Image 1 (cartoon, rainbow, N blue to C red):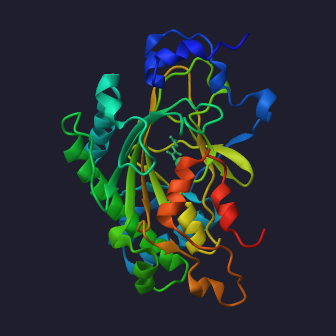
Image 2: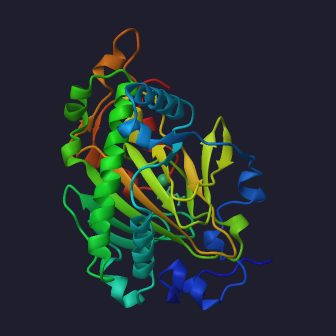
Image 3: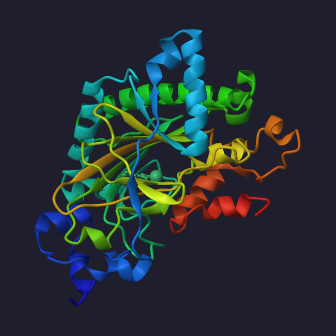
Length: 353
Ligand SMILES: O=C(O)CCC(=O)C(=O)O
Ligand SMILES: [Fe+2]
């Protein structure tokens, strides 16, 4: 089938608009980024991802906490990915957050307009694909990105967004900090050194809502291409529709989240501070033909002014320094302003290949 020209799409500014219009029966060529002719068949496996019981980490016995720390160590080393259950964030808050993000995407395009085409470090940004000024192909997603810590921002509409997102950001940030503390311990690093290394009191936290409307030829498109996340840990919530794939032992694994759980993955700053012991995991988002998928991502990184370097204790004892440091603000800006490629920035900072 001949690819449709790009031109008719100029009347639409978001994937949601294209999808809602019902105008497309096939995928426009600018969205074609995979398929047998491009990347060959990929192997996808169903595998059980590690599960972490958060309640045992914060409220269990000393023995249970030690066990969870060991489980986290294994999950970070072998997968860079795990599912968190019994996390204490109320189900009603998780649902309210998903609903209010959907409320944002459902607003008229002119109501969202003020957040479009912003600089990558603007605190509220709405757009489509990844970064349309540099994307070579386009991705089948719309997004809303909001910086929520150390300074809290919120779009003015829809009503309720501010109250719900401040609560959601706070609860997920506290959970992420507890996980980071435990991961720090799992590296056999001193708890007191974490604050100096990462300055988590001023941690940078961003909320990203990803909307993946139904796609006419999902086997040819991607919602987000393979990439790693720039921060320390990323916490992801889905609206009940699967689509996330993570790389594990050289193969792609489809992830199915349990109801009421969070999916958590390691990011680039964790790879650096752990001197490569915990690699940031490569992942991607697929789209489908029948249902709208939404994922809500909250990403926690160090303070934007921090230069994260490998923890000195991990470099002693015959381990070579594996990465140069880079100020996190510069890392973030570089990652967001360039095409989303697998670990390209870590490759620049890595000292031995
Ligand atoms: O939607 C997903 O499953 C993945 C989202 C993601 O990787 C991201 O926002 O960085
Ligand atoms: Fe990601």
